[in-house]
Structure formats: structure tokens, C-alpha cells
Length: 257
Image (tube, rainbow, N blue to C red):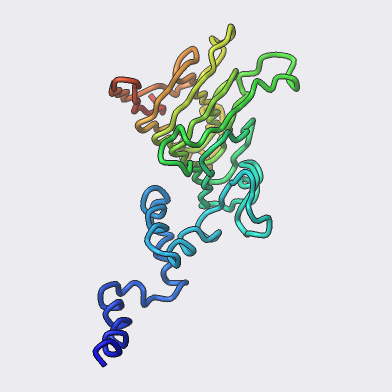
């Protein structure tokens, strides 16, 4: 009798302890949409099977997995370029940890967030190979990612052999807790982790209103002639660095003087 009573009271007790479980899926997913993708929304997926299903739903973010376990699963793409093409403004793309993902001259023209799915930036690597078979001359605009809108990247390692890791043309770019690497080679004086040419687009009124700039937060930068190359009136500002035993972490901004 006592066991039956306990089983009958279990749903009531669970609802009192966790009233969020009484919400329907649509309401919970709407709440999750307000959480920052990393770490908050990522942590909600660890609570239970239901929360994992909702937190990983394609409506909240797109996923890049290689290889894809289920080709019929919505919101999962074999590479970053396909995910960027399918993304809508405001979407978040989660790149699976492990292995190296190819990224070369991927243009991003809408406001999105790209995040590595590993515990550390080193777990998710985007590689921009030399790739100059198509370009007979060295082209500094060769990059892993090219930004023409306000975007954020986080928890990623981005490697470039020549050219640059990130090419910022317009909008506001936030780089948070990443590792930007320019490979060492005889022409590494032509390599830059970040190149910004945003000032060239200031003749357009709509872009003047939104402004241009790059914000770097707790990011490691390795190799290249210098961390940032800028054109026009953009300049490096408010630089901070913290030295650890094995790495140097940078905070700085690139904006109008």
C-alpha cells in the first residue's frame, strides 16, 4: 500500500521539485533560445533525454558532423560551408569536435554564431590549406572565413598556411576563446591571423549605422607577421595579455581611432 502511494505521489513531487518539467516542449525550447549557446545551452543538454532533444533541436542551432551518422537527420551538415549556406540570420552553428574540418574562403554574409563543440578550442580545428592552385599569385584575401556581417566565433582552432585565418570586411566580429594559427613557412611574413578591410565599405550608409570592428576575448594567436593587419583608419586598441606557462592569451579591439 505504501509503495503504491509513493508511486502515485512521484509525478506530483517531481513537478514541485522541477516546475519547468511541466512546461510543454515549445515553451521550453523558446526559453532555451535565450541562453548563450556555450556554455548554458550546451549544459542544458546534459540534464536529461528530453532536454537534450530540445537543446539540440535544429531550430536552436545547426550542426556540422563528419561523418554524418544519420543522413536523414534535419539540421546536420557534412561541412561548414553547407551549414553556413543553410543558416538563417541569428542561427548558431555547432561544429563537432574531433578531426580537422576544411574551411577555405567561406563567405559569411548574415549574422550567425559559429562554435566548436569540444571542451577546448584545440578539440575543433578548421584548416585553410595553402590552396593557391587556383591563385597563381599570393593573395592576402585568402582566408578560412570571410565575414561581411556581424558574427561571433568561439571555442575554435583556425589554422592557415598562407593568407589569413579570418578576413573581416564589414560588421562587428567577436572572437572568443579561440586559437588562431598561421603555419610557419618561408613566406610567413605574408600571413596574418586577422585582416580587417572594413573601412573600405564605410561609403555605404547602412553599414555606417551598424559600425565595424573586431573584438578579441581570451584568444591565443600564434605565427604570422603580426596579429592584425588593418586598412584605412582602423587601429588596434586596448590590448591586454595574460601569460601562462604554455600560452599567451590576448584581449583587444580593432576599431576607429
